Image (tube, helix red, strand yellow):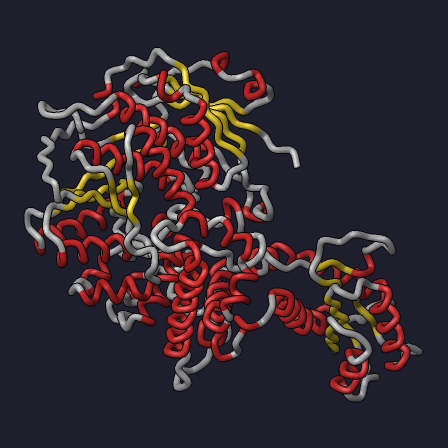
Length: 620
């Protein structure tokens, strides 16, 4: 695959500063903020002003803040590609940065730039992020910050924590305020007006409940004069960590805290093709350890990133919120990743992965009344799920939960061997020999809790409407393989479409019938790709005798008419079946308008008994 590289010039850096291999045929973007040239600024970076009469941030920390802000801005500027290119590494970008810095002697060290590149590359899932640093950046640091000044008054028991306004950070905040003493500095990101307003209301409620304990520090980092091309924001954790580190140094602390449940942090793939950038690694153990190593270098001494909720599930985080008398604030928290899609006064889209996880966990924790449907633009629990991507995610989510709940430790380890290899060495708080067992226990508890929520939601007294969560649960659709689900969808559509298509005029012959079927399937293909991204099909008649086909199953069509008896059709299907690869699933669609087949079930069973991985659909 040909991958286009991107060259990002920052702080007034010029193209000739980049190594030759990164200048060749690269897509070049210059990113600068107001401090360099207000007329040419295309990035807005705002932070509470750390500069005061008592404290000045070291130039190395100012560099770190700018580097993280530019990485985040480039991440949003450069489109990964269409969603149907997600498989394998199609979303992985190649990005090289040239950044003018203040502490050039530090950043030019190979050990530093390599660790920075490796950390950002892993966190974003891209092909590579590499850096060239050049000297001569002397623009006053105050140009980076907004106009709000404050005086740092640090105490030994001050704690710095990231605060997104979601369930996990809210629960961690309340637990700390309830169980520990000392001030709490909360770092949050201003990403949109709606999120900013919601965070403000939540912080006001916390400050009212715990007066004098909370010190919020919000920062802004966004593109200026351009709408973001990319919404995945995989580099956001780096920006968060840079800001938290700067605040920690101002308070003379050598650590900060990230409250995120372990199941979300691990983010084990729910199906094939979910690796690399498709799956978020924001708080993955390896991400945390890499950023921790980088900050230790910047700090010239040990620095730690603590993750107190790593061994909790989302349900257990909600139970912690309840135990610390904070469940009444649940409806004020925001977990949604698509707040720009919300309507009216809704705070959640109801379709993204975070919304789905939140709603199931709230049911499992007995907090569905606090996390009510009125918060959601789309109510996937009670209404028809019209969006194919949401439907697919809900099924994948339930299927994985069922797998977690029922797998043995050995089967679990075998299923996620590749992913677990990237996790085990980064769990320093658990003895090495106990890490796999601890991860299995965490995921198993999550699966059991979500299956409990599914049983609660599967109310037998409610009317079952097609396309709702209740119909998914009652039909146990999440237990079907991706191939079976796609096969069911194709069969359902063809069963409805074929009688309508040939109501006025029957096919001239089998070739005519096949041409019409191809037209129908091609018209639906985009919808199939959206709702069934991990299963694909091909038409057997279009496949050469010798082929290497990257498909999950093949579809063949037969038309019974005139001299074509059912037994002849069966023999023909059997012949087709045995000339096709045995490991591929085969779907045979038989059009029998004259009812030559007396017993559809017997016909299908007679044929399917001759081989495996096959299904027969008879349509009239």
